[in-house]
Image 1: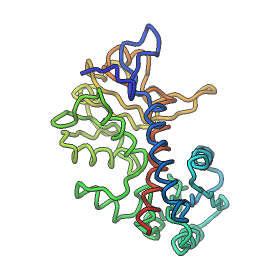
Image 2: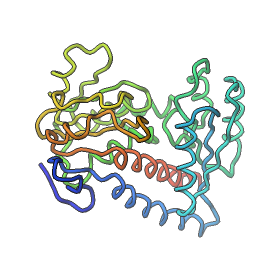
Image 3: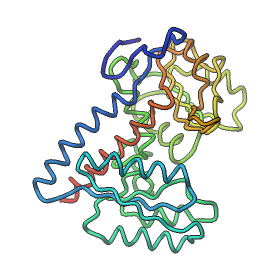
Image 4: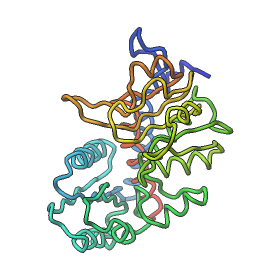
Length: 298
């Protein structure tokens, strides 16, 4: 069940932690090495992989994420351009910004930072994205492929969760019982669909789920994506489970996950930290998708 593989896991969290850490930074570094090599091959053919991120101002976490993508892309030979719109932007404004990127042949990839502000028609905006440039899997076509058990581009965070679950030393997904806490279109639902495609048996939990702790304890794999700090407690976790914490909540000047890390780490078999778990892998996976979009454009 456990592995001391240097590629994915370590026990460097201190003496009070019994679970093995799934080291997202180490995994992301390996992905970035691949991205850098593939981008170099494209530049040898006079093609620089380029992505535009459409962002509504006022979304501070979204801005930080977009800036992190741009910063991480630069040393790998990728170009990420942030196109900011004012907080009062309408659906038509966002649609026009997306259409401009779709029509620009020098840009092979596009991401609209989600979640969008309330009042905007997220469905109409997603439909404007060219599925071939849709590196965050927002277009209905790419969502439909997930429903069919296939992927072209999946939402980056959901793809990062699967990347972590496929690392050496992580128990097989084939036949495993998985519980996903959260049903958002960005993480919960796509993760559940990708787990089903990997032959796991999946339960999705949400705010209306009865006996949540009891249901959560059934999971050999537990994915927490609820957006509430330290929501998952030790009594919700099966002994030896693999726990993937998607949460990034800013509390008292630091980031904490959706999982109450210290007590849960004494029960889990493997666990992702926050920060340093899903986050860096998400960025790396998105960069990989940008390169894939550029490769497919030729």
